[in-house]
Length: 473
Image 1 (cartoon, one colour):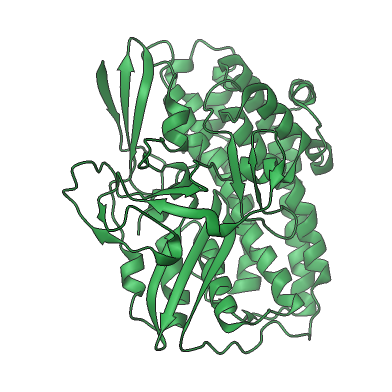
Image 2 (image 1 turned 120 degrees about the vertical axis):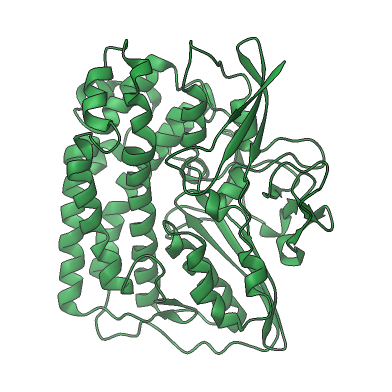
């Protein structure tokens, strides 16, 4: 048996290393390392609770709104307030803008360029894919990047700036929308929908989101001219519907009032989410303290020379079990028939994760138009939310990559403890005390290596859309 180290990966937010144990030409074991320690949780200890709103968005430059939303929700729970209806709509719009823009960036900038590599030159689709998706030089970015930039104007209107907005507060949103701005929001959304339908999907949003099965997806891909159809066709040519399977245990905190919270094992029944069952295991992390704790009692204490450690990442578990989170998990918990069909036949896979992101795009964009129309100029967007001297709370939201939780404890008006469990912490977690590998570590086992399948490992890693700077705090 030999060990191969892959990393650092390019086109990844933060640092990532993957260690593969290989026998013959197959991966028989994997360890995923998050080698960059951040320390944001310690930065927050001893500060005023409201300081979290200015600090946690800096955890990441591409999902800062999700961090803001989780902190604001935790502080709202601490204050015991419910934001007004306008604020709820504005938050949905702000979070959805960031999440959908992230899906778009992942597909065009992080994921598809791997298929333009010369190693695939023998495939019949390679020349067209290389022309369209080669990093920096591909034709896709000429329209995608301006479309994404215009789409982000939504956050400019609703939150003042991106990234690192301070508009999301415990009592709601500090930026009220005028009647004229509401019209601008709708026009911007229609412009982006036009791009998605013409370039990404090659069909109406409703047509794609209504696909009921894997067979319908394959038939659609043969008829569509969009960029996603190109991926679906090449994915079946490479067998990507069969690779990248992890636990098939899916977890979602719920989002936008559209995607429900819950957990699901494969295509079995959905169980209600009980966040009290979430724990973090530090058995193989370079951290000290109690091996297994709930996030609300967790700490982040460095032990850099820990013998059994191989990453800074903790191992989140739900009821002691490994769980995958992300767009695929949201669609599985929500019961979308196309994803149920894909997972029932092949399990969670590279193909299923990419398709789930695009199903989410097609389902959420029409709702964003409804939310924009429902905003009421002149009505409140924010209420007072005085914070108590003591208390505990948590904020649970869905970022683009999956379930994000912030747990806060306050004593004598200061933060006593602040713990963050991010989506990549779930998906890129190490082994736990029972030896259970995390989702990516499981998904890599059994993959071929060598000249026969030069980038299969990369496709599986990228299918989870890693954001390593969110992973370790």
